[in-house]
Figure 1 (spheres, helix red, strand yellow):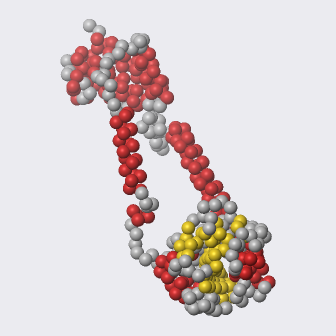
Figure 2 (spheres, rainbow, N blue to C red):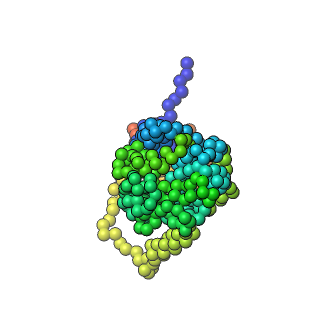
Length: 396
């Protein structure tokens, strides 16, 4: 039976324990980063789970308002595609669009065409500039400027006057159309009711979704306003736009640079200029280099000892042995009449050494060109044998 010899551990072939010792800091940092990312993802996903979904009882869901509407005889149906939403439009139906900005331009145009003369009510929740101009032509959106979301009606719309103060503060709307402009924030309405041109039906723009959320429904006049806006017809279709909708096809393919925010070119140019100035500052020369004598003299033995400790810390017996053998061959070559340039060639150095010492060429080859030692004791023995060989060659 034969057994395979275990190769010694060297700096070129470290053991698993040495690899772990060197990499454990990086591994620990990666684990902490992954754990932090997972924790943040879990916290954020829990915070807005089922947002504006009438089936969700979470704080950001809207199940409470759906239940109150059901008690008043209004049935609520949830749809997730534009086809279902358009098919459900009718004079006795209120269509609520939860996140209008998720709709593509083509979807917004189609939805406006379907609801403009249908005679029903369309409620757009927090419709921003990306959607409001297509869904309600003649209306523009402006972001909120005040942190106070609780506002007073300040209009003649009966639903708003009966509800009183409510949490509508959010996106503000500006229009020159005939409309009910309610709950103003810095003179711009956060609730806008625009009658249809035909006189039948209307569109309600709601600047914030707060009055529909479970945890805000019982505050101020939120519940009253929500029930009046959504309960004016016997049927409520709750449209939750989804990116998985087959009709959500981009109008055109945009490049990577189209997705970058405006001003990225000037920002990148400024970074390059700053980097160039930093490079010039760090690379400045104050004059020619001046040699300076060290304040202390370092003994050769200390240098050797320091390098030896580094080799030992890295378990680099192979490198230490190679350095000892190379230096010994360099010193031996001139002593036996071999040029230094050929000192590391066994075919040139070993015959000359054998002739000079009248010794065995095989043992000299193992000593000067052999494999790295297996352990520290073998390395010390190698150094002693090399020293003895050099003394023997120098002997007259």
